[in-house]
Image: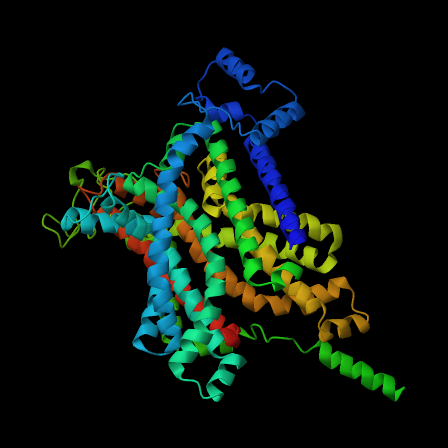
Length: 305
Length: 308
């Protein structure tokens, strides 16, 4: 187990280093980072001064060492627009995004798991057809479009819920539904297919042939085995929601990382874009690592396999 | 002599016996589409969208850009103030919404089709190399794959698009490269599995080299599932392209694409809601068509996955 923890830990660190390199070279791949940041008609003198201030005149290996050394010490540079540490800006906005992603995950799980279990337990029933329908809808409705439709219906027409901002729990409802919708579709499909698979396995047949009641088999034998794969995808779902929240935050003017990133792109605040990419990659890699550890606790085959 | 020849014949028979049937010939595939309601509906929807993309200029009297300011902000026909000259209404420049939606299909289909084709080409090539040759090749290619997959996809795409700047070529390249890990992973896994099977060993025993085994024995067994995978990726890519357009990072803003139109729709959501509703509906219909088609393809090409 300790070997597994260390091996996956080392892999995660390597991935993080790779992500840093990727971001570093991606910015320089198109040639001059200055042209990404300064307006096109900036005078030569201003460009030179900027290059000097940003350390872009130093040799590439010195820039790389400075960049990675800074990142390892938690220094992700300064925002051009806010004149403030990028990491500070990110920490300020992080709670709102985590809150939104968690609410979306909760919504997805609360709808998807019961529906998927009901559908998988009774193939061909009304619940099963609903589960398949919801699964398909999740793949066909773009989240940001759904967000706008929800605003038009529940905020403009019915006036039940607020359409933007983060003032009360009520303002969390619409963005969470819009963000969680496609994840809900995926979870329904997964739950349903896992239930179908478990139900047709040998140990369930054995349970029935022992003469156990159907309800006993469902609750004691099927459901516990359905839980494992579902728990294991929740971590992946969460990182997916962090990315997807960019669009939803823009639609609902939610003061989180998404609107921060959108603003940074609009204002060509490239240091901030770079810092946010690294930060989000760090979170995603960490979550992936933790998910693997949890999973290996539940299912020992992973450790050796 | 006789023993040798029969062994040779057996090996030959085995070598020509694919593990899964894969595609077969196209005619029975189309015949199997009859009678499958979901598949037929999906094919019909995709056909309608593709045809309107190709024949956009014949379908509508208006051009994709440049409107008549006199007829700006007209609501759809069935809303009060609607005009039958503009079925779905117009935007603040007087551009016909339906026209722009029809032209928008071009961008969506072009980006998703060429993007998937590029991702497929890169992915299958690298996946074959990693799976077949192993060693350092595998280490490097798998490292690249894991790296791209470790950054949340939407964030990766947004950052790369910011760096590249908005243009059609850039968006296609961007999706081609960033979607390739999905195909690399799949191809590598399948090659590793197939490599150990008897029919490949038999082919090798008959003296078939790498350049015969890969095109004649490995690729035919990959085509079926790869087509299914590519179909679903194409529908996902339509979403991603629209998402980039929504943030102003896809094709230039004056080009009619569904994402660009949704970005405009958001700005005028409260005053001209139709600008947001109908381009999104076009995305949903297209994605529904492709997904139904993909579900049917998967059930047909891989009968074990039916209904899953």
